[in-house]
Image (cartoon, rainbow, N blue to C red; front, side, top):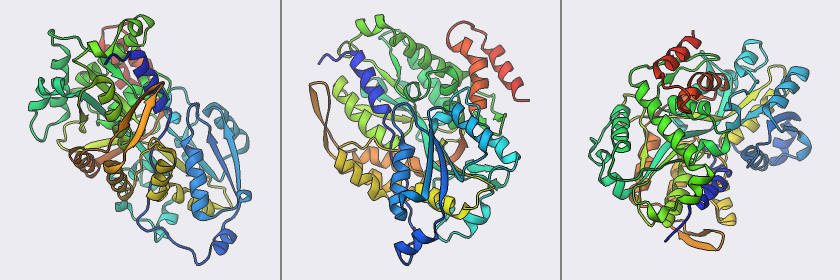
Length: 466
């Protein structure tokens, strides 16, 4: 089977322009009547950016409106093509009742400063609303994600989706490497060393492909670094312009991202695409940095790459820094409510409905469209568990061009691995385009090969945080 790399890259692009899953509550409130609920809901204004490829906010908003049985006239929606335009609108007219941010907010150069909005008193403090909400229980959500919506002890942001990094490796490569001999509970240092040693082997051709952040954020060093370094705990306690940096083993992590970044850039050149064919490569390492949906992406990429490569794949998550058996995520969907809003309760209800979309909304859409790559990763434990159960039995016809193949359900082993991963997430950080920009400024010369002085780049970054 000879499948060109250009087909793989193109399909990765198309798949990743689709977002993924959603959130389901274990205790949504049911109003006495839909008419009463609508009558009690005050009209609200909503701002969000329409992303270039696939707008999962629009999907979530529509479904949440249906869940609350709201009339369209109650929602005054303003959409913007860029976050620059959205920031300008807020500067001119102030905060809307409800502001929704997606993963594109994290791009370097985004001018909207949500921390400054909170400092200036433009954002509502949400603690009172959460305390009065009988349907809200923090333990229903993935550990750490609600804390990612706080500045100090104050809840200003309501998270509604998350993303994370993982790698897919071909089984022959995995079984012949140090990865197969890692202890049952390994830390990030051990994993990165094993991957480094594998990359240094001289007995086979190596190809590292980033099929993640490069396609649904501007492909840049800052984007890749922010996602990887926060999810793995090298950057912690993210604030408006700073973070705690774990410098131990950080050079090893930076070298890992360098290999992925540089190899992907090389493979995306015309010459590489023309001369490469996956059927000739039996030693492939596929790296996903990072995916908007762990569950759906795992289902799609496992089936896609196993078909194209004609090999079984192994899922390899990245643990959190030196904490064996624990993981971290980046919160990539946030809802913010204007402090001056006269309809805070209504804006809050809609934001909570987005957080807690029922799993049936996702599964019904998958069955109807034959595509599980919808929306973003849920933060709700029950929804994630339901989605894993669904994907173990879901079979569909997939394809690209004239090529068709059958995508089959997750194996029991993989389903168990994903379930354990959810239970072992204990850390989360919010998006931060300003730290992304600093990472971009300091490390791009190193990642692009313009400079080999990693120590200087690291010192420059750490200095920029003080």
